[in-house]
Every structure is written in C-alpha cells, then in structure tokens.
Length: 311
Image 1 (cartoon, one colour):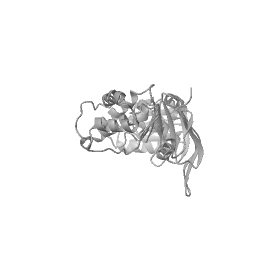
Image 2 (spheres, one colour; image 1 turned 30 degrees about the vertical axis):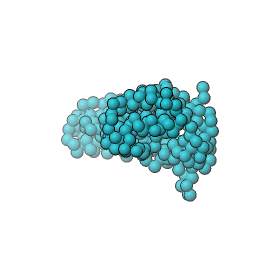
Image 3 (cartoon, helix red, strand yellow; image 1 turned 180 degrees about the vertical axis):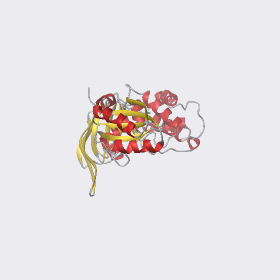
Image 4 (cartoon, helix red, strand yellow; image 1 turned 90 degrees about the vertical axis):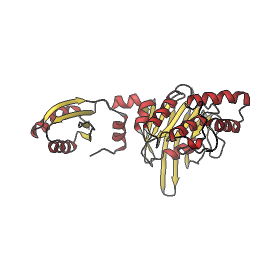
C-alpha cells in the first residue's frame, strides 16, 4: 500500500538558519499521525512544504504517491487547516461549507448531503448563528469540516487544539478520532497529551531534526522500565533535599515533583535506583510510603529524547 505521505531528506534553510535538516517521514494510510515538537522546532515549516505552500531547499515530498511541488494546486485529495484559520464572520457554518464546496466544484446534488454530514461530525448541526459569534472551539471544528469538504484522503492540521479550553480540545480530538481508518490525519502540535490520546504513530522534531518516528506503544515499551514513583512522609525540606540528591545520581536522567506530592524519577539503571533510593530516604529521616515503577507517558519519552531533562 502506498504511504499517505513520504518525505526524503527535506531541508529548509533561511539565510544562515537551518529550519529543517534532512527530515525523512513515512505516514501510513489511514493512521492518525502526531507530528510533535517544541515551539520553533520546524513543525509549521514542514507542514507548509508538505502542502505545497513553501519550497524545500532540498529533499522531496510525495502525497499519495504524487510529488508535491510548491505552487502546484493542493488538489481535492488533501485537506488542510492552518494554525489560525480564517472565516467570513457574517456567514453561518452551513453557508461557509457550501461556499467551500462550490470552490471545489462539488455538484449541488452531492453538496447538500455532504454539508449535513460534516455539520453533524463537527457538532454544529442546527447552529444557525453567524460564525462571528462562535467560540474558538466551534471555529476549529468548523475549520476541520471545511478541510474535509472535498472528501480528501489526507487531512493535514497545524496546531488544531492550540489555545482551546479543555472542552474545546476534547471536542476537536473526538472529531479527529472519529476519522481513524477512513482519512489519514497528520497533525502537528506541541501538546503531548493530545498526541498520547488519539495518535497511532508519532514523529518528534527538535531544532529541525527528526529525533524519532515510531508507533506510540513501541516508544512507551522501549522506555517502560525507566520510571520510578516515590512517595515519602516527613518534612518538606527533607523531601526537597532528597530530590536534589537523586538529581545528582548518574542513573537519574529526570526528576519531577507531581501535583500530589510524589517524586517521579526517570532512570537509566533501574536496579541501581531501587537499591539507592531507600537509603537516601532513611538517611534524611523520611518515611517511605511508596516506591514503584510507573507507567511511562509520552511526555516522559519526549523529555528524554529532546534532551530537556529537569536536572
């Protein structure tokens, strides 16, 4: 089966700045693919190159087996939602979708049913107010519906949940999850929880370089034995000193304080950590309430791979 998106050696240089450096991606057909990286990693630059909105300095891009060249029409097989979509605020959601459908030349007989289906998918069926009165979440859902109006095989979204409140994020993610297996969804984001929740595969970009590309379950399995959760009883000063001592150990790669007072440690040598930590706790007169290995989240993998450990 032809991959939905393939890039080979994609590089983008702006003057002396290398925004992308030899990025190779393969996005499987029908998957929900998370393109993850900190702000400024090069995600939007990559999205613009994949959609044909920008030239690559070097490398190649194929979407559904067809080479992508900057300036060529994107075509109806690819839907795109930028990070800040634009709307005509005086239109209703239905009017906006009809307008977008006519731009694609969709016949009137088919357009009506497609608009109704997409309004249902976006949770906007029966909403007669003007777009200018929509919440940010409603606008994002309408933007995704607009990107789907031509029934594309590939949907590309740039930061689709950025700046949304929790309810808006939940609605948008549920909308994307409903497309699994029917449309290939590629979305860039810096919000790790969104990727962890709905994506099959993730690529992590850092300073223009691809750090990893793998199924999420494989990344978690790879780092599954590297996290220890500690809960201690005693004074806060002793717990702070314990954190500092653990950070200084050669087997400790990241230490974080949980909102519930626990201490989460990412370790490079689990046996060494399990031997040393109880002694550190006892030496400070603290009580050991819990010491266990924890489930690794995508955030743990991300912090480890991009080298931003909390030391």
